[in-house]
Every structure is written in structure tokens, then in C-alpha cells.
Length: 198
Image (cartoon, rainbow, N blue to C red; front, side, top):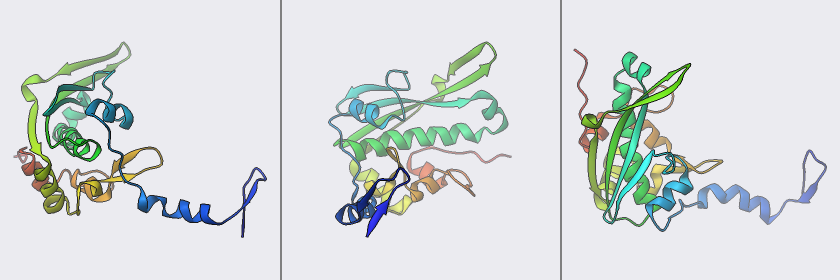
């Protein structure tokens, strides 16, 4: 069998084709030497742009900005809770997956962003910051009992570029089609509380 490409190149289909088809199954999330290297490589939150700060390398303590557009929060206040949960989940679970840390503390710092013709402004809500400390064993327990996956690596999935949340984690975080918001059990596991509208 031969594979033909649009540019006219053809090559025999053999072990290479088999390797490509099994790549997704065999791919394991990368583990980096430290948190800064992990954040730089993953590219979701930038230390250079001030979105994430390593407050302490060991035991690891990171601060991540939970950035939300102010206009969106006015329309739907729960968006701030959802973004805070996303930031906490990212800092905690991604650091356990992508580094060898055994304990992680994450401070989620809510930031309201306002965009106008004159540019953008940020309002940091320090009084609304949330801090969560977790051990690797606690994170594994949440992954199994709340998200419903076997281990921490099952929380992420290989994408065309980089690593994103797996389907079970997306559902837990309230992302995707038909979402009803962040799973209340997950929020409780992180120590967050959502007040129902009266």
C-alpha cells in the first residue's frame, strides 16, 4: 500500500502508519524539572506577562490570575467562580501531572478586565483571592472520586498542539456543550462555595 499526498509525494505505508495511529494512546504528559519550566512549556499562563508567579519553589506555591471581563461578570457573576475554579484546577492538577511536586498551594487572584477604545485596564480583587493547598494523594483522590478517572494523567488529553483537559475534566469544570457550570462536588473538594441566586 502507498500513501499519496496532495503535493505529489508518495511513500509506502508500513510501520510509520502504524506508529501514527497508536501515538495518541501511547502519549504520556510531559514531566518538567520545575514549575516555571512547566508553565513556560505549556504556555497557558505566562510568567512573563504576570499571569502566573512562582511564590515558593518548595513546597510549591503558585499564584495565578483568574482574569475575567468585567462586563461578563456583570451579566453572569458565576463566571468569576468558574474562572477561579479553572485556575485552581490548573495550578493544582497540572503541577502534579507535569512536575514531581508532592504538595502544591495555589492562590487564585481574581482580576476584572475592562476593554475600551482607549485600551484595557485591570482591577485586581485581592480581597476575593482564594488559596488551596493540596497533596498529591488528595489530588489523586479527587481525580478518582469526583472526576471519575483512574489517575491524574487521565485529567489531560493530547491535542494537536500541547495538552488540554480530558472530556471528564472538561465536564467537571463546566466546559463544553450543554454545560451546567462547574460540578458542585468539585467546588466543595476545592473548598469553594457557590451561593444559589435567591
